[in-house]
Image 1 (cartoon, helix red, strand yellow):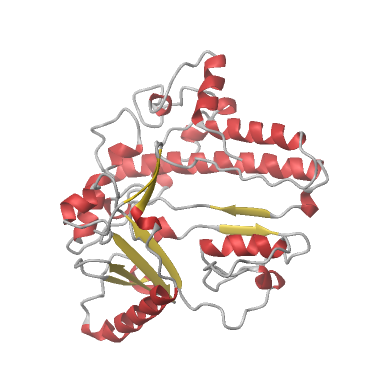
Image 2: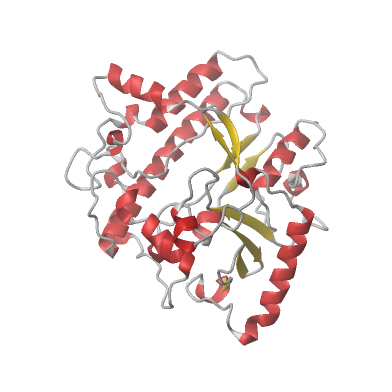
Length: 362
C-alpha cells in the first residue's frame, strides 16, 4: 500500500503544521540534526503505518499490502528521539579513493553533494564531521522504520494471521552516505546496489542465510511460485522457493547483474551533458562474481574492476596486467547475460502526465 504526500500534508495541517515539500523536511533549528517540524507520531513513516493498519483491519483474509516507506532517505531529517539517537562520533568516516577520479564519479560527486542530502543548509561542507552527522540521522530514520515494521508484525500476530502471511522486506536501492564523495543512489558502488532481502513464508525454513547471488528480479517469480501461479516465460528472475529448505540449488546463477540508467529521454541529465553521452550510451552495468565487481559503461568511458576482498572499491584494478584474465572473464559473463536478456525499450521511455514518451535511439 502506498500513500502520496498530499494525504500526509493534509494530516499535518489538521494538527496545525502547515508545510509542503521540501520545507517539511527542513529541521526546526540551526543544525541538520535539529528536530523535525513534526512529532514522531506524525512522521511520514508513522502516518503510512497508521493508514496501513487501518486498511488491513477492514479487509477480509486474502489481502496483499505493499508498504513503501520513504525512509531512510534524503532529505535527511528526523523527529525526536531519532534525530539524536546515534552519536556521530561513534560512526565511521566516509571511504575515499587515493586514485584519480573516474569521469563518471566526477559528475556524480558534483550532482550528489552533501548539501543536497538535507534541506536548508546549501553551504554544508563535506567534512568528515558533517558526514558522520548526516549518517547519524540516516541510522535514526532506519531505526524509526524498524519500529513501525515491528508494529505491522505485532498486528499480524495479534490478528492471528502471522503464520499465514508471506513477509518480504527489501529495498529498491541503497545510499552512498558520503563514501567516495557521493550521496544518494546514482553510483556503481556496492552501497547503492547491494540491498537487503528478508523473506518469511508459511512453512518455510527459519534462520536460513543464502550466500548464492540473488537479484531483485527474483522476487516476482518467487511470490507467484508461492501463490501457485505459473511464472510467465518472459520473466528474467527465478523463484527462490527452493532455498527455503536451506539447501544449495544446483545450476543457480554464479554472478549478480545490475544496471544503472542515468539518462533522461526528454531532458538530458547532467551526466549526458557533461560526459557527452546520448540516451542509449548513458548507462552502465555491474557484474559481481565472487569477490570481483566489473563496472562496464555503454560508451567510451573506461571500465572499473574491484576486488572486494582486499580493498573494497578504493582501488581500480582494470588497468593491472595481472588482472586481465579476470577482466576478460567478467566481460564474457556480462556479454552472455546481455545476449540472453536484451531489451532497451524501457530505457528510452518515460511516463509523463500526458502518457508515455519514447525517445529515438541516441
